Image (cartoon, rainbow, N blue to C red):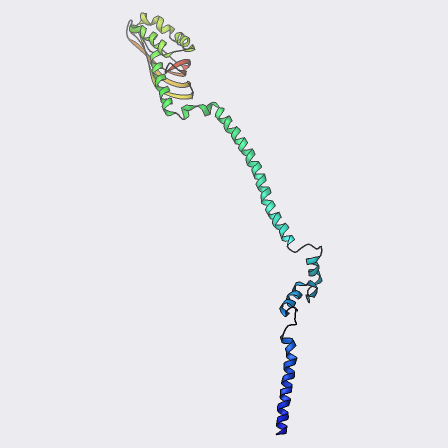
Length: 249
């Protein structure tokens, strides 16, 4: 029994000693930092970092350049390249725009650009119709109605065309009553070469027949081609100039 009691007492003493030995490690010292705080302090202190290279420590505290700077300069270089290209393109496009504007103004100032015969169908048709009527009227003559030619001349001619026409038909007017002449002009084709505001130039193709009936009836035929300068005056197109390329009477 004594042996058993001694064993139980010994186990109690050992258990008490173990409890007292474990008590300081289980409870944190009064006013001290917790083990977690101490671990965080060691992680924040570069001097306590075990196995960390010295160059890395100096990189965080010394004058060496941080690792992130090199990619930053590369990114700036990549951004600067496109900006420089855009600047050059802007200058080139600006110069081209100025050149194009000057070129367009020059083209608009040329006679061909102002030629509405190429674009204004209604006005072109009007010029052709009125010039055709004028040519047939002023280049036709009937000895029985000589006054009709005078009226046609006053109605359809202006400027230097009046004198040109008088010279061209002088023989017809002089010999008309004696020879009993009948001159008929028929326009077979015409084309408006140019219309510039109130001026136009028209090419005219015509057939002419000249009949004499004084002794016996005799008729001759001829073809004529005229270049007519016309002006819009008093609401109508009048012949202001006549260029002949071939005529007969």
